[in-house]
Image (cartoon, rainbow, N blue to C red):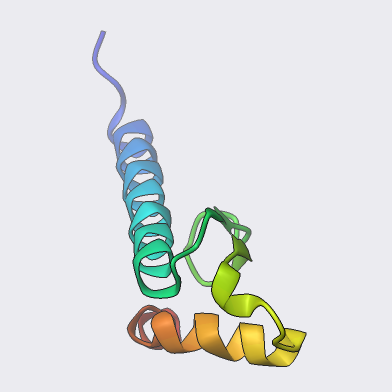
Length: 83
């Protein structure tokens, strides 16, 4: 059975959100040599707020604020699209 148009849009939006999360995770992994990255959309699916957890050897000896800055620099273009 075919899905109603509204359900199809919801599935497409969910797939697009998952793609965006994966793209951000890939960028962080590549740029920061991360050993673990988890990106979760916590905005209810609209893609305006994310919870991101990163483990990277590049963070060693850096304060939390410096670590945050490193991640936001990698995701600068993505963040600009959110606002």
